[in-house]
Image (tube, rainbow, N blue to C red; front, top):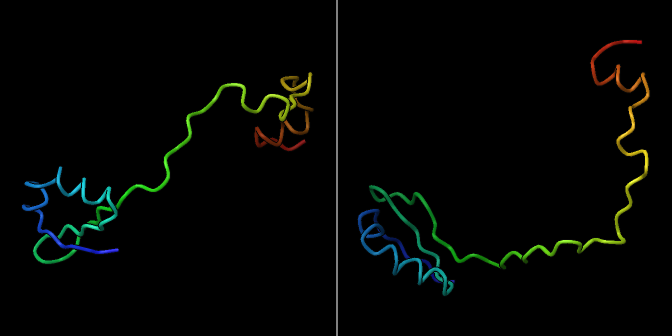
Length: 82
């Protein structure tokens, strides 16, 4: 992958062009006072859109899921000793 260095002023002026170049695979280093400060790189792999109900049949929730906890567990969460 090729790498190019631009000072902050150049990067601000040509940001749109630099983003297009990065999207095509270039790595762009943005420097301030001659020192690299940031790297503009292409995004890899998009996120898949979530499909409601996609896990149907894979997940089981017990009938007593929201039942009160046993007293000793409630006490432990509350920081009380028995």
